[in-house]
Length: 108
Image (cartoon, rainbow, N blue to C red; front, side, top):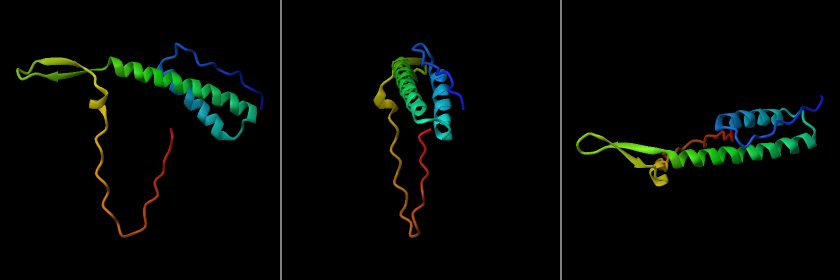
């Protein structure tokens, strides 16, 4: 299989473009059709794309504003607080007497 030209992660790539390219890289790496050197090159590109995605998400989080209503029912804009967006802890599942269920975990 001929080597394909590496698509560089453009610093100006938006989140969706970076995620799309990252998904392409993961599919190609999981196919098992790449030589070791190509795997390493794609891994490096993927890590750069992960960084782009993290930066875009951090930037978006800083810009998010929450809209609430005051006692008069009028909308009030508040700055986003990361603690307000923290996930609510889930209650522990009830103990079962049978065998534990296998949980499938996927990175993507």
